Length: 506
Ligand code: ADP
Ligand code: MG
Ligand code: MG
Image 1 (cartoon, protein in one colour):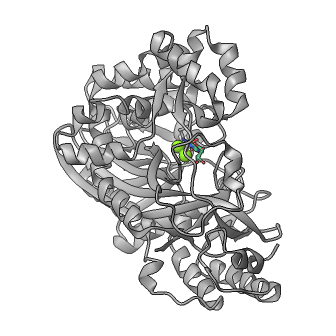
Image 2 (cartoon, helix red, strand yellow):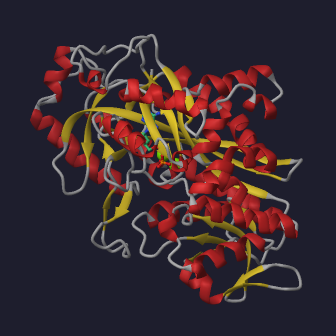
């Protein structure tokens, strides 16, 4: 199917609107734009050689940007500093965290181990009062009508090409650890300005706005390094090896270099830290290869699979006990669990932390309904809701990195198995967001580019640094769009489902 046909039918939203392009022209734009993307560093290592930058190609991206209402994006950007602060405060509130997580900890060994680390460092007394967070707050443009809709409605060819009246930015999740894609996306707006121009689209640059989230995140790391107060200390990127998205990480490192050349960045794996890292007894400084560590930036450590042995857990504990600034701290990590996000949806929970009614309301407006399914009457009610209409929900477990959610009839299946078991406390039930469908060409190395019906997830990057009672740094640093075929439940650039994208503001 060519874009020409879809645009003529005037049914589905697309940035090209009424521009018609024949197949030959589309292929020419695709060819040039792929090269332009490489020239702008939209690059990823190949799946076959994830350890070598000699083998890299363009990262998956959309040929054109996706439509996003200007006000909707402005609204979630304006609220981000408050979200940053909220998550910081949640992480400091041990009573709140414990109430949220107590039932999860009984059945979820991974989060229990993180919790145990938190207990140790709390009992010993914090060696480093400062927490640093490089966050990504994810949303979708919800196009839900009042009536129940099943997922097939997504591909309804009568879908409107204009912005639906009911469109609202609704939160998918708040990532507090290893949030990626800032580096990959940091020059994509230039690529999209180019492809749109080739297609003959008239637009202002401000419609495909400047965006360099990697710069703002790098600034956050530099601020952390300064706050540590030792110019000879390094910023440690805690990573896996091999790592396909190393160039996404390197972009942050490069931006740090451009901000302040005196900051030394070191890439270290669990194995290397296990072997050569230690905490100096006299002052609790973290050292590796005689280099003192000012900031540990975790790009690994978010998944049970990252901890291959007890040694890895000991290393996480060691880093947490040190006086290095952790990005994130184990508290931040736990505050980012799906369970905490579900508990924040309860009446009064946001207001426990945010005293300004208007701000609390703006935050709350981004929430869809979420339910605890813990053993007990409320949990039973939530499970009944899911049985009655599973298409309306997503069942989430407390894991990161994609591929962990349960959808549709699989929800019924799973809940039938666990409904009388304590295990069910490891999940939460979330109302399903039905994002606004558009059409787009998705480009991935080794695959034919094809026109698809797609939906978009919008991530807002934020940085927060503070102590228990003092804010030191709070910023919003840009956005990333990740666009996927409408029929794929899960997203993820690395799992091959999502494509980097930028907004075209309307
Ligand atoms: P993870 O931490 O693994 O990324 P997410 O909560 O982001 O977990 O879920 C993974 C993906 O599932 C999201 O990127 C999104 O595509 C989809 N998803 C999650 N929650 C919802 C929801 N409430 N409605 C629709 N899709 C969702
Ligand atoms: Mg996540
Ligand atoms: Mg996610």
